[in-house]
Image 1 (cartoon, helix red, strand yellow):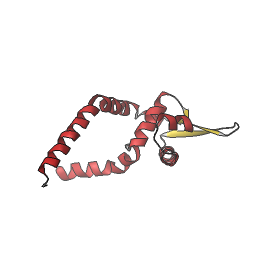
Image 2 (spheres, helix red, strand yellow):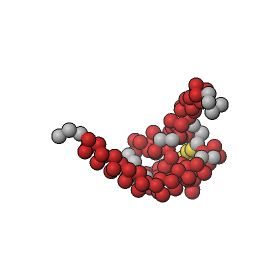
Image 3 (cartoon, rainbow, N blue to C red):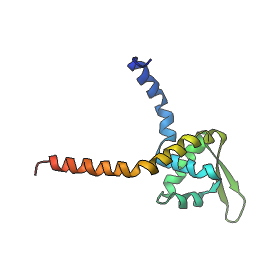
Length: 127
């Protein structure tokens, strides 16, 4: 299979719709927040500042639609909504935790690589 490039590309392309649903930055961060405990909308929003109300709403709806998050309306005044990770969503905890750890460990290296790249590109541009 390693030498069958068309088959490998077809396999990769078949996962793209799923990865687009779960691998965007807000979905990863929301699921990481909810892995520790259920949270109300505004608590999630505070933890993910600077996410906008609209972006959080859209991401939570998408995650709920995909079966990764559950939504529970709490009868209080005012009405509150609590979100929790589902068993399906919990299966992403290990890879997302690894991804967040990787980002913390290597984020500085990536930033430095960007600086080097930008400086090289600037030096190559005609004045």
